Image (cartoon, rainbow, N blue to C red):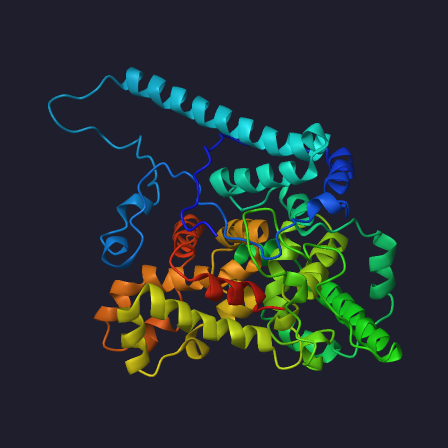
Length: 443
């Protein structure tokens, strides 16, 4: 396996385009369950490190030297009075700002038009695998163009394509809704009212009633899966039918994702059920989707194919992920791990929610969506590396604090691009055996 990923050239720009019906039809064509979507390589390999416009000082002391290469762009203070003896001509400044804005808008439109064209026209040259790979590259290099609230008309369809999930009939979703309260309904009602309660964007766009309906429908579907497994007198093997069961075409590997279920462990093959925290995990799906049926489709696939171990029994997948946070931190930053260990702080104490919810518990929500674009492109297992990346970005604060547990009580606001770049760098720092364990942990 190559330990030095190549760097593809970035593309520019994207914008919103609305041709929803035609786009979704071709999106279905792109994500159909054709054999060409499956890689011949058994293990989903490590993602490629995209080209960055600025040098990334990422690890240990390098990553702690101010993070100037990752600094957010500050607001343009064009109304401030100019100082100094040599004041530029205000008309010249106005023309420069207008030209810069025009270039940025044009670049954004080009990027969005590229992604939109892929959804509207389907695979180029009839190659689905190549088109999916190109889509992933565009997402990692340029992102999905969104408005100020993090919304994009393309995002939910891109997620469904990356999941290789077919469209679901609205009537099918409504059939679950009309069945009434599920066996997990009381648990759901105890959770929904506090879901992202302090996030004004989520509260404005997604009602509690919508969240209750979708979670109740998911609970019914998981209940039906369990009943079907009992009737067939064999456990329901989740993670194999449909989706990305064999792996992604993003490199090479040695182990099949479809064989990560231990046949000797019956509990590892059982269907999931509603667990506390699933409400937070569902929130970004509803926020990004344009209908509850779309959110239901994507969320159900995520729970049963991508991360079934997170919602099964005692949530063994989550606990394996927490152990991996400690293992990886030991390798990439032994000093930081030693300090945390000396204080009795392991990942089970401070990282349970970020692992279970794929960092959806950490605001702001638009940054969560951008991080999920990356995770759904190359595999949600990379969330473990994203959590380690956040710890490294907090390194100075943790080491200088007399009470690191207070620092880790709440992670700082997400910065998706920082975390993504560092997480991809970390993929080159861990051994192949540990990376294989990382890929398999949520199954």
